[in-house]
Image (cartoon, rainbow over all chains, first blue to last red):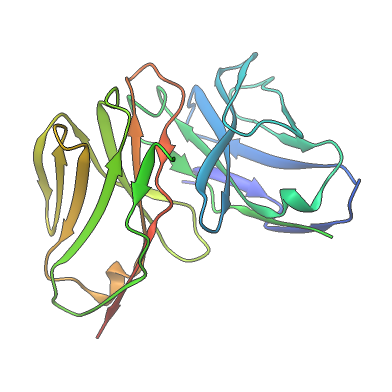
Length: 114
Length: 112
């Protein structure tokens, strides 16, 4: 079982560059989400989706875009990278949403912006 | 002030000890409470899921919720070196909500 797959595992960007973090799940989950994890700040929700074609903002959405064209994929786009976006990014999915079913996390993308 | 505060740690205990991990919260609307375990360089994985006040036991793990005090705990009995990880509490208002609120995590080391 692949579960939630995130690519790349590591990335270094220069300020102002753009990139897309990929997330794919093979469990046919309707709900998918992106978190960032920073020391002393825990997991913070960036964006989430309750199904294909539906997305919504989380706690810290500025500087990030998402789209959900298929059930399986939920990419996260950084439009113009800033040093403040240096973090570990986790994608998570669940069958019905975090209240009704457990979140399944990928193993993260470690992003450094210089 | 954060909605969820978690004992910061780090916590270091000898093998076989009983471990207590704790979170407090300010939003009385939270109804569902979860504990996730995160090993180094891995994503979190769900350990326990509880609803309403009381205790829930699963093997060596017991989750306790006290809604009147807005306080939740995770107890680990007979701790093992394999329990060394970061433990995150999480809370949600209802099953239809799209957002969980996480604590910052407590890092536990169990020494053989």
